[in-house]
Structures are given as structure tokens and as C-alpha cells.
Image (tube, rainbow, N blue to C red):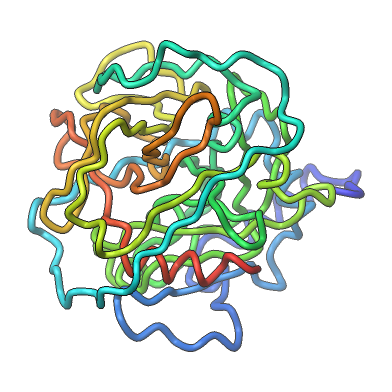
Length: 349
């Protein structure tokens, strides 16, 4: 950011307290056609009365980030969501990742790849892709500070992140607010800075019905000190389309910032990026990976075809929900027509 206010304290906290999350804390983007199908994109943006981007960034102090409550992982009921109509089979869409011209120096681990494990481990190498493209997503919900996980994704604006819908929408027509994305967040550090939200989108099927099949979202970011996130940290590619629904993606890494695991175990710190390696398998209308990451990992990307030598691969899923705290599997929606529509709704903002 180019200039910061020097008077924060009580004034800034009063602004936040005066505008807790309601259906009116963010508004639908004007002049956008109304979403009519569950796979259409419902869009939002900060209201004119909301905190400015500078104020949002200043609101998220190191202390507030550390105290933010990791978003609980929804526990869905198998078969509980009404499948409804089948989305139209649009043409599959994909985009490649991008490596900045001058990445920060540092070694890339060469021995972590392709040894499948479902008990998540700490990703220890930072300042390089893929960690540079993955970060913590902070936001306020019902007046409380929360956190999820997210990743930069191929977009025309080079300034878009991918996450889970339940981090963005309450599923009943209301939005979260005061979004702040910190790429490569680790041990309380934000080595590249902070990006705030310009606009966002989730499928109507989630925003107006909380259907897990559509638990996916994208956020277009504001510039940070004149910089686009993708130009600074790079971004991941993606493979979207109904044609991928029955594909089992081998050698896939799931990333996130969990504060606990399922089943529970000790020693989990939400200030650390964790990951699992395995296959992302189709499961009825959804996709699943064997990975134990819990609260706070929602929205963390599932990346396939990612040689560590380049640091980018293709997002083909993300952490979204579980079927019980004792189950090892983590589930996410298939990224088909709804994913294409959601990305398209913000990728040029």
C-alpha cells in the first residue's frame, strides 16, 4: 500500500464492530446478471461503507492473525445434499502456472515427492514455489476473526486466489468480509506482504443453499503496493471441466494450514503449512483424498502434476469437508462447470 493511516486503534475497531457479517456487509456486484442455476456464479464485493483496503490491511495485525480462529471443517452427511440438476458439460478448461522471473533464493526439497502419506507433514521450504503461492486467508465472519487456506491461480488479472465457498459465504445469502490473503505465511511471518479482496464469487448452489457439491470460491485481489500477487509469488495452473469428474489424479499434493487433524493428534500448529501426498479419486459427485488436515485447512489446494523443480502444477480440487472427525478422508467438490463460471466471474477484475 502507498500510504497508511496513523490513527487505527479504537476508531478502526469501532468500524469493524459496527459492521458484523450480515447479508448487507458486502453487496452483489452491480450490473451482473442474476445467477439462476446452482452452478452459476453469485458475486460480491465490499460495500462503500466497508473498511478501505488500507484499513483492512491495518486491521490484520500480527496479533490478530495469530488469534484468528481456524474455520471448522464442515461435516457433511453422505448423500445429504440434494444433487439437483446435473451441470451442463461445458468444454474443459485449463491454464498453466507461472514462476516469477526473480524468485527468492532457497533450496527446493527433492525427496518429498511421490511418497504417498495421509498423516500430514510440515512443508519446511519457504520463499519458493509452491509454498510461495499458498497462503492463509483471513476474514471476519459474524464479527469474529477467522482463517482458511487459499492459493494463487492462473487468471488474466494475475491477482486471483482459489479457496472453499464456506470461507467466503455463509450459505444463506451472506458474505464474509475483510478478506486478507498472506502468501507463504509461516511462523507468524508474511514475507511477501498482504493482499485484500476486490471482489469474489461462489456458485449460487452454495451461496443460497449450502450445497457441498458447490463448495468452491475465487477472490480477485486488490493491488498491494502496486503489485499483483501472481507477479510476485507466481501462481498455480488449473484443470476444470465436467470431463475430469471421473478422473483419478495420481501424485497429488494437498496443502493447508490446519490447527488440528482428523483423527485428532497433538503437535499441530496453524502457523505452519502442512501437506499430504496421494491420489485424488472421484467419489460419486465429489472428489476425495486421504489426508488428515482439519480446521483452517479449508480451501487449501490439491495440486497434481507438479515437479518440484518448477513448483507449479494444476489445481484439481481443494479441502472442503469431512464425513466425521474419525475419518481419514478429506472431500472436495469436482471442479467442473461451476468452477469455470466462478473463476470467469472474477479473473479479469
